[in-house]
Amino acid sequence: MKELDYKKIPNGFLWGASTSAFQVEGAYREDGKGLSIADIRSFRKSKEQLDTKVTVDHYHHWQEDIGLMKELGLKSYRFSISWPRIFPNGDEKEPNKAGLNFYHQLIDALLENNIEPIVTMYHFDQPYGLIEKYGGWVSRDAIKDFVKYAECLLDEFGDKVRYWLTINEQAVLVVAPDMLGIDLNLPDKKRYEQAFQANYHMWLAQAEVFKMCQTRFPNSKIGPAVSYITTLPASRKSFDVMAAKDLEDFYSFAQMEVALKGKIPIYFENELKKLDITIEQYSGDQELLLSGRANCLGVNWYCTTIVEAKSTNDTEQFIFRRIERIRDNDLRYTNWGWNFDPIGLRYGLRQLLNRYADIPILITECGWSEEEELIDGKVHDVRRIEYLDKHIEQMALAIQDGVNVISFNPWSFIDILSVGDGMEKRYGMVYVDRSNFEERSMKRYKKDSFEFYKKVIKANS
Ligand code: BGP
Image (tube, rainbow, N blue to C red):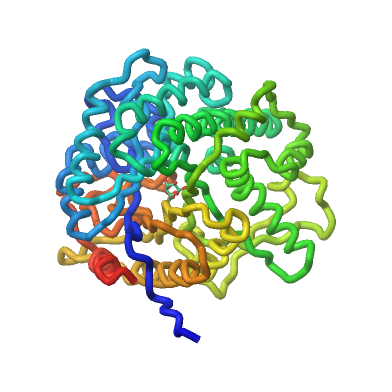
């Protein structure tokens, strides 16, 4: 039997790295940019931690940053376009030219450096104007405004960008609905009703965009960037195994099923019935979901989560209420509670093989967060190196198993603003000399993981 070379990654594999606009760009009001809900949400905590106003100022450092990407040897760069840079209020007839120009410059520079742009259209930053106007995604009106925005991106960049991600982590928006502009103080049922209605409208909007992109650019790939949390049972008991399956299906696989198969799973609708929630659906919606399908799948995979059933036979409670997350003390955890469980990545990727055969898979986020300081111009981020090493190894094994992974984009290329935890929760392979409240030099420093990842890319293994 031929010795399998577990370290071999197919030629042409897109070794990349990842960021998002509101977390990396800063320049929150520059060149006509409007405010997004991500801006507004971050201002609520401006006194406690960094907000989106400056972050690491990629908007003014982008040439230098692309120079570092080139030095790193990246073959791809996954980033997002700031929706309110293009439509500041969300409902303008014409796009903001200065916003478009910024991304033309960025994308042209990436292409000149043979770095494939992987572009997320919407990464948590819906224009706040749409929330003020009609409540954002809770309203069906959001569909037409997102489709118009996506069409503008395809018009402008469709012949330069071959990999599109429509929406980043819808499931996170549902479980943290203040990111949709939904009032967290609403009674549970009302809050869930609005969040799941918003989730449904996002499904319809992205189906339209899948169709539009594949009609106009048949050689491009477009799909969702799904928050994929491989969920493991706390014990071998069937009620725990069922609890883990229920949560993983409801939170991660339902998003993949809708995008890739065009059907809302019955188990998903059954869960909503437990909250006595009925999603408002129009005739023609089902056909739209069925006709607008992704032709690739982005997964944001960080860690496994381990759950147990709160009681052995209670399945009448809504999913989030009948399941408990537990900690496995045999595993290492970040300071923010995400574990180090690389075999879980191979397991999770094999599940995708079983479900979706050879759909191209892009790992669009995968990373390890740490509080880090610069010491003598260096950051010895050994745990991040170990995290990358072990997860790349498991990804390679999954590829050897037949899983069609075409790209790996660790979160994050450079230290950027965390969604919820300011500047100190660092993921980057490039350190930025700033803290929550001091801009310091804003200089970029290559961490040890930069040199490690550079070697991996060079060796393609
Ligand atoms: C994912 C988001 C990213 C990034 C990442 C890390 O959910 O897609 O935007 O934020 O999580 O999480 P955090 O920023 O909370 O550390």
